[in-house]
Length: 443
Ligand code: SF4
Ligand code: SF4
Image 1: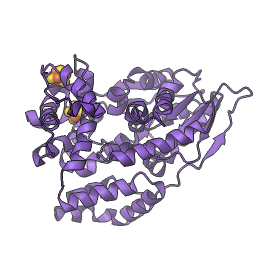
Image 2: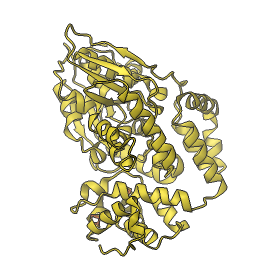
Image 3: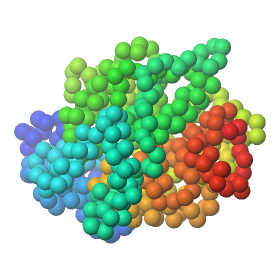
Image 4: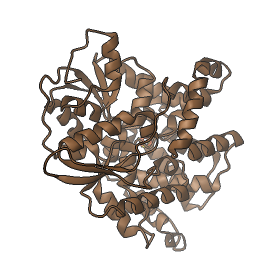
């Protein structure tokens, strides 16, 4: 694609990067076939190619974002399916991230939207605030139908996504020693924000499994949200501040073999810290090092000698590939191979490249599209008649669980269970209700 940025514009390193990305696009349109929003509505402006044209026009002409541009970029899930499909290697993620910052800085949204975005940005990344918000949502949850009847779609979406149980305390900074006589490695674990408050069993399963493999696990003091929540809203300064805090926290640990992450959405962002902070002389080098050390938990476990516990397995697992894992990090085989190795019957979900509609705060901000994507996803999953659904991202787990009665767990919960840990709570509940579920590993 030809571009016509001025020399003055090209003094901005973000424009340089976006120009490179735009020039790589050959308008072929292959990406449209795998874009969830285009698949739903067939509108070119809700396809990657259409969005690329909108962004090009906005940046080249140095225009404030229009309502039209904001609408179509807001509808983008940042699922990155288009990057997997693109034969020209267009780095859509960096382009849309740049566009979101431009929109945030130049477009004035309606008051209600500004208010909601601000509340989400000031709540979700902070576990204590998020706990209070969840407690309030639990009280309001019985009113989901009322909110829907009054057309308060975003409020209804938030209430529907809130779990029926109270929030949990996040994992405190501490060191978990290896459970073997000889230590085989030392890693930092990103406890995260939403992940731990909603489903602390995920990180505890990861810690147990890592320790069993001889790995010491450190939850660093002052490490927190990875920054992806606000990053996807275009709130660049907040996202970079959160990234810098994590880099400082992990650097202070000294030598570590990896930074293990159990939420794949966070993993994609941490792996991008090197790019996000490339122009910050104080952080560029350390950010690049942190990105190199970042590993999804299944990516890291795939290199460890995991043994299946006696009596493990037999359960049919529908493996939902989170977009951030399959498209963002290109981790495709490891989670499925680990599950299969430990004796589970793993089934791929048809049309697995299509997003479930979670996408960070997308299922709150764009409830209609998110609901349609969830219904589609749950339909394809339920046709597999699985005993359990496994996913590598808390956002997908919450989104899918809100639309099905099939237990939904994190992949590492199953790995932990089948290698000697306890049965995942969601499966335990189901086993209590339905005796027909196979009794798999040690529970
Ligand atoms: S597939 Fe790649 S090159 Fe083709 S239109 Fe989409 S982004 Fe451009
Ligand atoms: S990131 Fe996903 S929703 Fe956005 S343009 Fe690409 S495929 Fe479509």
